Image 1: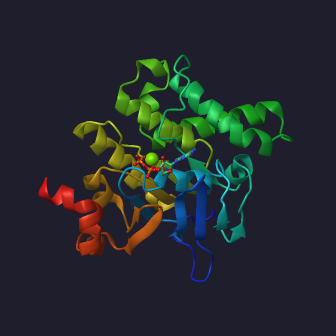
Image 2: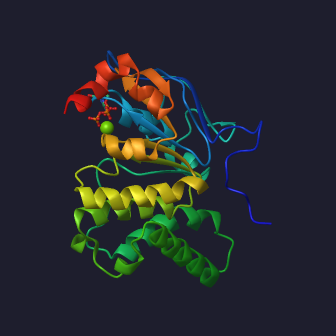
Length: 261
Ligand SMILES: Nc1ncnc2c1ncn2[C@@H]1O[C@H](COP(=O)(O)OP(=O)(O)OP(=O)(O)O)[C@@H](O)[C@H]1O
Ligand SMILES: [Mg+2]
């Protein structure tokens, strides 16, 4: 039977769990004791003002930065301090706030490179032809999920801004992650592009544990199953989105400006 990728069974560990996660830059604690969880089939949104530590948190979870203290578990396994390529191999995929795309390569080639980086090493004993096909299929499947398959032959530089962000999501998906870490995938998008991306992300939730950092509150409230508000490196509050919207402290720290806007 195919592997079920629905929410974890009772008692099995969450896709991601952190405890007291901390990262210091000189005298500044950018992430100052964060404990959160992500579960398969749920989208956990992290919001907070500029400089709250959201990107630093993602960098810690992906292994791009080493924690100063605290613990990170992926699917019940302690991965604290492991380098990014080891964490990626355990099924963690991330997108970047700034683009990672090779502009002179085609949309398909960009996805293929991303798939190869992950699947290439795990398939090193397979026949070259089988490996080639498997990597192509992973790239194609990712482009379909990100609704970019109709554009696969275009050079990346020809894509619109919104399509480039879709390509970044596709490149993340091409690595077949179980936990997706997305840093502002809607940044700089117009209403139509945002709606399209929200549709893509919504479709990904059932098969993945997702952590989404995003400033677009319409998207956050359309997508989030759980919402964590970060301020000054710490979790100010965490819970159901409607509960967060009604929370006085949260309104004052972050959402207040929006509700008057
Ligand atoms: N490599 C670094 N060296 C020194 N300070 C850093 C570094 N990376 C981040 N910081 C600082 O850590 C704090 C948190 O930054 P971070 O980028 O995580 O915030 P953010 O919540 O992602 O903000 P934004 O919403 O603007 O993307 C900021 O004060 C930032 O200047
Ligand atoms: Mg950021």
